[in-house]
Image (cartoon, rainbow, N blue to C red; front, side, top):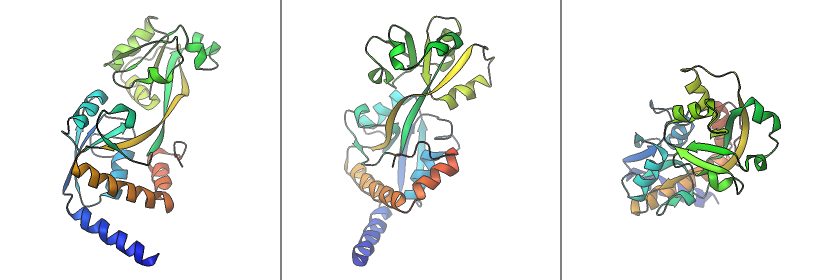
Length: 238
């Protein structure tokens, strides 16, 4: 076993030496991916690739998918294998992706489960495809602009907005929040993975990433990193 571990470490070091830079496509997500290179996703990648230059490209999520599918970046954050037509996705989830809902106090008072959304107008951010996880009969649409989505809810033209609570709260600090808005936490959940470009570099990065993830899980560092950067291990997937 000791010999195997030494060989793995040597292989990792040799392989890592050939990876000088990584191009990443990501959205700007509170606590996960910030423009200054901080956040859980960046810290996790830096933990596994400590001596590699990381170049982020902040784009809407659908653009991240297209960039990776067309082999214009090496990694896309925040997706899963179902999102891509051509990509290598990690064996390991980096988190349980829980999504929240903003709605009116009137609807929140009667909401018990997602079955109560049947017949309701529900919107989310373009490219997230949360409608696939909602019951049949929900009237689901996607928009590119979160401000527009909140305005539609405020005008009563939709019944609910499905989005990450942190991102909505950050936006609401810059605009007046109607008193009848209510958050309902964790209405949807899905495993989030790091996905890699479908070429030789992507295969090498994936092998290194999966090896690194297995070590971080085994020694408890992944859970600790989540607690340090997200404030809890609520979304820890293991």
